[in-house]
Image 1 (cartoon, one colour):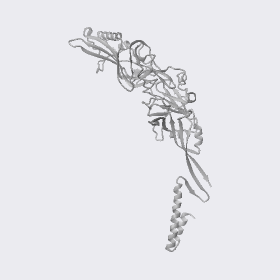
Image 2: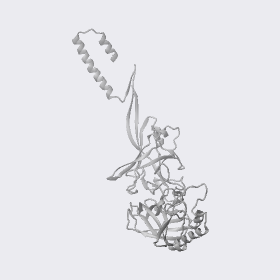
Image 3: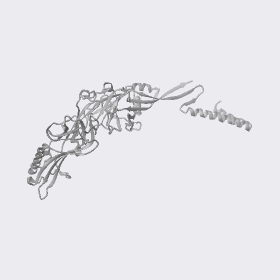
Image 4: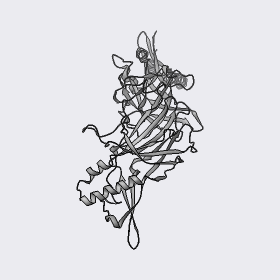
Length: 477
């Protein structure tokens, strides 16, 4: 008898009040038990029919799925328009010694506060040359073989270029890390102790022969009354190269817009008046860094990564992958088990797919740990095809998760559920497509950040894809 039938029977029976109350109490208990049964099975859908009871239920399960990390190198990396002068050498795990030198093109001499070229030399007798100096301002960024070893001296060198620092093609607007220019004369050097995390101004004197040559040029322009000052100055000073001594063991960063050559003089008179003329950077795109790797025998050397479509998989690199801005090294993630997930999705529904990437302990600057990485889709030829998005259409990025007292458990967490389900919904799944990590929304580095990630093949803290799915069970009886 159904519940409906029972209620109808109660309405049609004419019983004494006491017996009616007993039946009502019994019915109330029965209904309570029945509702409790339904509440306990709230995740199931009961359908009543004449002959069968069908049950759609599921079990929630979470498992880790294999991924494969690999490293690829961009053919070139934009290093101009970033306001950084990187100079020196630093030994990095897995990739060996990194070297960097910087090139700048300077503007014609100007008096401070003047927006136009103004030489204003006060004649041969009135104005007298004193000295010529160069100014750098340290960004506080410092890397060396032994972390924060400031005992080692650092020698910085300044040279004049033999050819004009300019673009080879009129359609170009920036320089890249693979470019360099030949320098033919050393005009100054300085040895000092770097101070990490501080931003001091570094000023040292250039050779007086260069200073006198500069004064002669200015006098000649004043006497000639030249109107094309910029063109003549480009012929005189084609640009400068800033580098370190060959035995350098540190890599330092300086602000490009603070770098300038200063010409010091004084005007004779009743009281000497000091004058300073400044030669500042001519456009941020006319300053760039040339970066290279000195050790070709490493797994991630340029010899092993000659083209951007070549990948060094974790299997051939001690189950590691590398991120390094200056050399253009990027980590990509492939999903070799994606076909298996597609087959499972026929009877299992993925409700959560989380990518966990564990960095190798000690492979990063603990004072500059990246808080996140952006994720982009990438094809077999290592060409980015778009940003990874979520169900709301927003860009997906990984979030840093760690205990400040135990960095060994640190990892980057990225929810890629929508991406995985989108891939599984396609008729054909290409295992050669994957994801790539970037330091920002685009591959335009501003610092020489470095990090190594543990591959899936390591024993401890392996990078994985963690999948949570509902396993549906349909039974008929």
